[in-house]
Image (cartoon, rainbow, N blue to C red):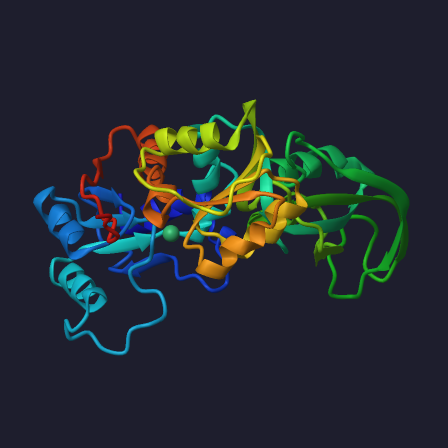
Length: 364
Ligand SMILES: [Zn+2]
C-alpha cells in the first residue's frame, strides 16, 4: 500500500470536508507515492514518537494533532516542531494528521467520550455548517430507476437513519438539438418535447464529485440538465461535541467522581457546584470553551471539555457545571479510535499503536 492509498482509506472514513477551515490536516510530511511499511498511530507527533516509528519500522505516522499548524518559515531544528519535521524527513517518515476530521465525525472524538461516560441518546452539540449539497436533475422516465440507483450507490439520499431518499416531480422537457448534436431522443434540428422527471436528492458535500460522476455516467443524454446547490441546513450528524443522557440522574459530587473514574484522571477543574442533579451531559474533546453557550442552550446540566480559562468558569452561571478534565485526558481514547478503525479495515497491515504518553501537562 502506498501513502496515497492509505490517505484514500482515511478520506473514506473521515473526509477532509469534515475538517474546520482553520485546520491543517492530511499529509503534512512525506511523499504520497512512497510504499508504507507500517503506520504508527499517536495523539501527537513528538520527537520521541518519530524515534518510536523508526524503532518499530513504521515509515508513516498517523497523528491526531497536526505537528505543523500555522506554517513553518524555516526548518533548522530550533523548535520541537522543526525538529520533528526534520527528523521525519531525514528518516523518510510520512506524517498524516486527522484532527478536526475526527472532531466533527459522527463516531469521532466526542462520541468516544460519550461511550466512555455511558451517555445515551447522543446528538451533535454544534452541527457543522455547509456540509450538505443538493442535486436537481432532469431525467427521461425510462432511466429513472437506473439513475436513482447510481446516485444512491454514490451516497446521495442517505441521511441519518434513512437511505435511498429522493423527491420526484413529473414535468415536460423541451429542446432542439443543433446540427452538431447527437440527441438520445429525437433528431438534429428537431423540436423535441419529452416527459421527464425532476430528481431531487441531498448528499454530504464531500461526495460532490462522486455524485456528479454517477449522474453523468448513468444519464443517457449527450448534455445532461442538472443543478447542484450548497444547502444552508446543518447536517445533524456532523459537528463538534455531543450531548447525551446519563443512565441515571446523579448528584454533582457523584458525577464528578464518576467522570474522574471513567476518564482515569486525577484532577478535574470545575465551576461552582449548585444543588442541581446531573442527567444531561454535553462533551467536547479538546479546547471547547467556544461551545459553552451551545451546551447551555441545549439544556445540559454539565459540560465536559478542556482548556477553560479563569473567566470562562463563570459562564456556567447557575445553569450548568463546567468541567475541565484536561486536553490530553479528553482526547486520550482517540488513538485507539483510529487504530481500531484501521485494524478492522485492513487486518493484515502493520498498524502499530504508539505507547508513548505525549501529554505535555504534568500535575504535582
Ligand atoms: Zn486536541
